[in-house]
Length: 317
Image 1 (tube, rainbow, N blue to C red):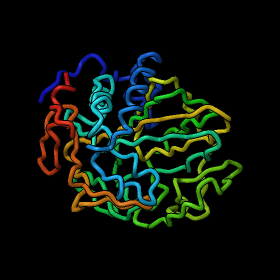
Image 2: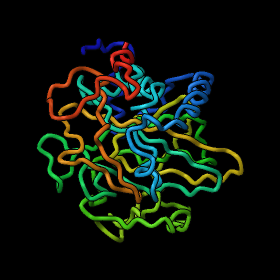
Image 3: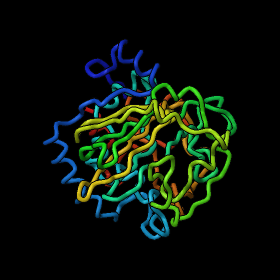
Image 4: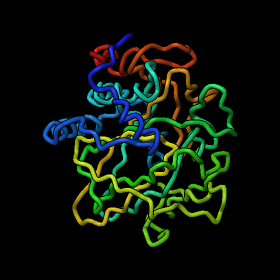
């Protein structure tokens, strides 16, 4: 598969900003009206898990975030979003021409929910103890690049309902050791105030991974990413990022994260299950989606069609 990259690739000025700051955006992918229509349909379709990649009994048992993984594999509307060229061409500007989407996640924040801990992710071993992505030459104990995350607002994201926050330029140094393990405990959810802000990490305390136990994020340098529904932010997962708590009475914030790597990156190396957030999911139905260019490595499982049987190529026009 070869796609001509022209219309939505990042300019040199935009790339310079991205490399300096570790993020770029907000970028408009859909109008608010288009996003309303997409989310209205997707919200109905995700209720049907009959073809979902992960069984409800395993994915949902005691789990929180893990139940939200990879619904693009069985909801074609979300797969169409994953392959949206307004996103993939910009990502290819950063990663190179051969790009895989290896995971998607929903990130809801309901009224009264705590903010998300400041965190970084490189190999994504932070919860399960097993690296989920490894760049060429990267080992389990070395600092790499992480993944490109594209976080799209399916609803408006405001300071009041829990918008993302980033610390520009913080992607160059890892402050967390992903070879450590965090303790999962649902009693920790909505239970902590950290530096004056209610924060947690879906039942974990991300501070357990700090290289320096006395270190604190430079919150005075943080930037709030207020976004309209239909806009996205593109950032390295190694960028220090968090979210504000939802202090509203009625405003529900929904974000949808798509994660991209070059096809040369090994995804779920030597792994057939993911165990984190109190749940366990088998990877037998999982596969990466080639969203741009070609698979020039051959060491990842690549899906050629969605779990509904729709050819992936139908979404790449």
